[in-house]
Length: 434
Image 1: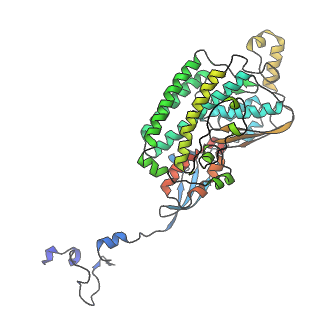
Image 2 (image 1 turned 180 degrees about the vertical axis):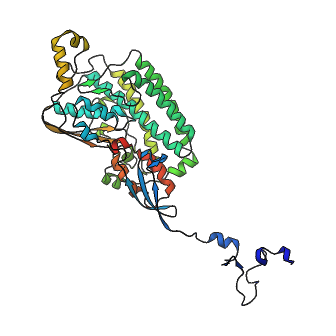
């Protein structure tokens, strides 16, 4: 063979092992020993070392300002620590420095994707202390507005989860459906996002004229989009490979860690407060509790899809069963008097002034009130000293146990599995960090 036909440094690229001659060392290339045939080099294990990686706090996949300190061995997660608090607003202490009614805007900012559910949870706790029974129509209005916001919450999760796994069309469909609902919420209570609607003793206002018909049309379109989203994702090979058997957690460990809501039901535990301890008018509603079996990201996705369909059923039953009537208790110790009474009578002026300046006089005592929010059990521990402000208020945020469980769920998993897992637990900084 001519010299020109040989490779770099005079090495024959076609030479076979052992052709260098007896006793001769293998050919050298740049001071390194060639290992032999090319296929053996490709099969050789890659050099690996343990590495600590900061994911966040400004990372688009963390859905907020959260820092994940991940210990990696190659692409595998060996350990993880979660650093939260960047969004902390001092919710509990802030509520202890305002009147009972002024707490409502603070609850809006907990899970800001389903704020009415937070309003209702706090209102039920205060009413429990006051032993106050609200009008029937107000109960229906609270249930239907809560279920409308449950759909908003699940649409946000499914849309973001699809987008971060490459399905941009899913995100656009979810945003279209959510915007339809936001339009109806703006008509109901004047806001699209922080929808402050519940009041102690009832709700702020009744349904606008023609709202039921418009909401029904919006629900029809929303459910069509939900079906299209499910058709795009549930049989999509990429989505299934990224979600099935990733972020998996057993039923026993989920219960031990305090899981509730869709994440617990995805593990096979059929616990839903609307069925286990019905409140308002949930005991009059016919709906199913979807339950998974694998406790993985795919099952958590399926829970949200099916729960939106069940919420749609509940809302339509509210429309059918709801009768005209009062929307708030006609007791001026708890509810503001109508404006004509405030402007036209001294009693109305005095009642309005005392409620605004001093707050509702809630009987002394303590109570724990819990409801089924979009992420699970939302609990308010409330202590009253008989004054116009909460003496002590504690929050049981439904999203916190799932966030705290991330190191258990991700140990040994691939780094890429962290994205769909973080999506499927639905970490909302406003409630987790309070």
